[in-house]
Image 1 (tube, rainbow, N blue to C red):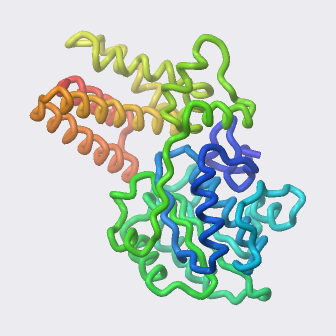
Image 2 (image 1 turned 180 degrees about the vertical axis):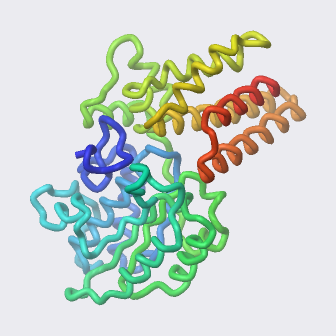
Image 3 (image 1 turned 60 degrees about the horizontal axis):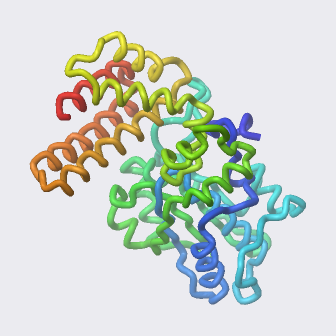
Amino acid sequence: MSEERPGILDGAVHPAEQTKLFGHGAAEDFLARSYRSGKGHHAILIEGPEGIGKATLAFRFANHVLHHPEPAEAPGTIADPSPASPITRQLASGASHSLLHLTRPFDEKTGKAKSAITVDEVRKAGKFLSQTSGTGNWRIVIIDPADDLNRNAANAILKILEEPPKRSLFLVLTHAPGKLLPTIRSRCLPLPLSPLSETDLAAALESLGAAPSGARAGEVLSAARGSVSEALKLVNYGGFDIVEAFRAIVSGPAEPPRRDVHKLADVLSARDSDTVFSFFCQHAGDFMTDAARAAALAGDIARADRLAHLSFQLGERIAIAQGYNLDRKQTIISVLDDIRATL
């Protein structure tokens, strides 16, 4: 079904269609118990790295609430969604009148997702929440992720969170909670999720029919850092080749061949290369973070500070390049040059 869902990786399924959850049983049980008590928070901030199952957990909990609209009558655990259930089918198809999945809108002109969740999208949430359900059911909004809200959209969401309608539930996903408005964080109950263990990651990939095999199976599980999406990028998108080329350039000779730099930049800036570009940006950021941590542990605080500062600068530069649609190839070359110079 991924072909019908823009932005879904090859080998993955949309979280609304996923019937299994791996590695987050404790968080799921907490949500079930909290809801059953009737004292659950109206806004849950589900925190954790990208690709570890935050959206899957959100949709499973939404499915649970909609199947059991009266908290006192709800079971104390969350069952796997039944594909035969009308509610499950509606959620999976995006046709539910009780749930709004607020994410970056799809731009039909470019064929890609827009760079941010705008205030116009948040207005849709306001209208959705203002509608009276004929069954008195819940209204659930999944913000996926809140990191993509631009400032105006974030302020608009804040106003809704400050005065939530009755029987409304907000499931706010974030890869980087520290970047959210403190006022948004303060109005949500934080629910941090950890990266998947290698055992849980292997099981998740197996359920998708994407379990790595051969000599690199262990390497995939290790390099993915507990993220299903990172594992799929390594297996299905040439992630290992990108990592090897990146390491050779930034850790190799003082003056690596410019053809190697341009070859990598060409791959990452080619048409329809959003997935590999995103993978490169994530890997480069992780690489710098690891380098800064290693320097700090070695007692070289000045070097650690330089590396951490550069990591922050690179993240901002990439965000600006994406937001303003700047030349991607030049951005990549600049990023590589700066990392090499600092290292």
